[in-house]
Amino acid sequence: MTRALLLESPHSNADAVLSGAGLDVVRHPHAMSEDELDEALDGVEVLGIRSTTTVTERVIANHPQLLAIGAFSIGTNQIDLRAATRHGVAVFNAPFSNTRSVVELAVAEIIALTRRLTERDKSLHDGVWAKSAAGSHEVRGRTLGIVGYGNIGSQLSVIAEALGMRVIFFDTSEKLALGNARGTASLEELLGEADVVTLHVDGREGNAGMFGAKQFSAMKPGAVFLNLSRGFLVDYAALRDRVLDGSITGAAVDVFPDEPRSNGERFDSELRGLPNVILTPHVGGSTEEAQENIGHFVSSKLGSYYRLGITDLSVNLPRLTLGTTSATRHRLAYVHRNTPGVLALVNQTFAEAGANIEGQILGTSGETGYVITDISSEIPVTALSAMQSMEDTIRLRVLSRPDA
Picture 1 (cartoon, rainbow, N blue to C red):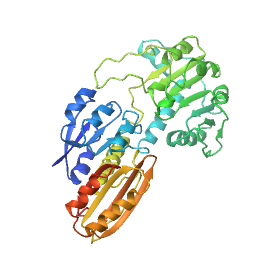
Picture 2 (picture 1 turned 135 degrees about the vertical axis):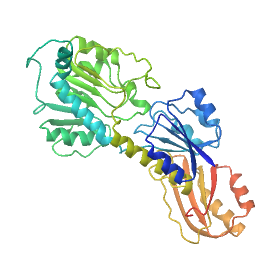
Picture 3 (picture 1 turned 30 degrees about the vertical axis):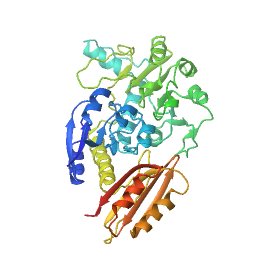
């Protein structure tokens, strides 16, 4: 039976979905290093991870049997997507399932920092009664600056506006503003206006180090800063300096450049012990509701790809869905280099072998093409050998009776 390996304890509902797709599920509770993962993937065709395990080009290249990787998270920067695509490994994630959880954490932290609840809480835990309105503000009427107006940023925009905040945003892509939110022409414009700055950008390589001393200096004096997106985006030493000199009055950080691989390991950061700074262990999407949604969503995508070759919402392969008919006997899932004439060669091979095409769909993305073909007859071995030997072939799978 084909094995699926799940790391970092995604929700248990993933097991039933993958088992239903014909996979034998094996779990490991923690993240793995590159060497550990390389060893653990022997005989594994489907891999599930969360945000801590890194899947490198070496690991992918060493395991040609690996068909798919599921990131039980929003981000996929922990996976070498280019290597996965070159080897025909489909990658799936959960782009929407934990959006609400991240937004609610951001709202809670904005209010907590603006009211300086962290300091009030600490005083009482230290046995000191220190009732004061000094430095405590309502969020109503204050300006929220959202950097990255995607799924999370736009939903945060709506909720913040409902709280009475004025919302501005900056995104490198043109985005439709929701409600009364207003896009700014530049990041610098946003930083000069916002009382609260919150980052919600993706983990692409070009965003690394995007927020440092220059950006913190451009922020409005007395502003609050949040990062619930990626740890490597921010120079935290620069943030520490601005918190200590009082120009930034509060910060909330949920993600870090180097995070422990398992619970109980020691955590170090230059932000520890700072006043009015909230540190959380990458739990933006870690609510029971979000993890249940993510578990079902990602495992369903992995199961559909394993059984039916469907790549709907794949991160790296062309996104294709093809229904089957009662006449379908075999389905071929063919990943290839996007070269003109490949589909013609494929169909010529089927015709010469006397195979009858029942249904077919082609998609291309960049340098990669993907074809799903349903056959209502037997497929001669010579036809499969011919396709495997084509110069542009990356991966060919034959799925018998995919509707069974």
